[in-house]
Length: 156
Image (tube, rainbow, N blue to C red; front, side):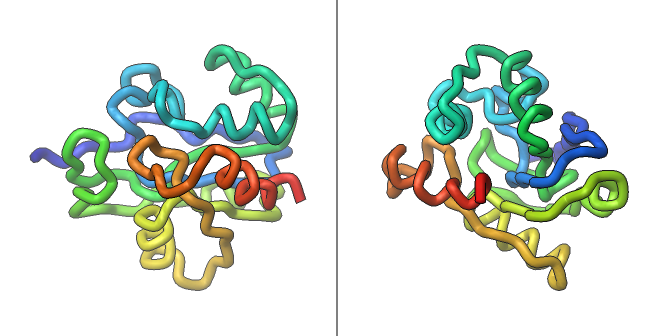
């Protein structure tokens, strides 16, 4: 396995208030050049339910994020990973989230999944955050309804 470098820019602007961090983009997200693009990932479906909206494509997703002051990025800047399986991540290096924190008005950091949270705690031991369950199709221990309930913290 070779070391992969994170190919996506952080999505945010100076009005972003909530920073959502995953681990590392899936193969599909890297191909589509935006976050959470695997058709079985429930990320966008959760937001459609929470915010009562339709997010049909990447353009809709970006407008939604901007309108709701949500920033997206990932904890890891480079790593070895097999396919899109977070459990295989090794040799992880941190993305510098201070870049976003200096430019935006972030009030809340939400980290998605146990592996992203593990690395976030390692890289940023002094930063407070909410750990939310992964929306990945690999995490079927949570129903869509369960995920929506957990993700409500984003709206609070």
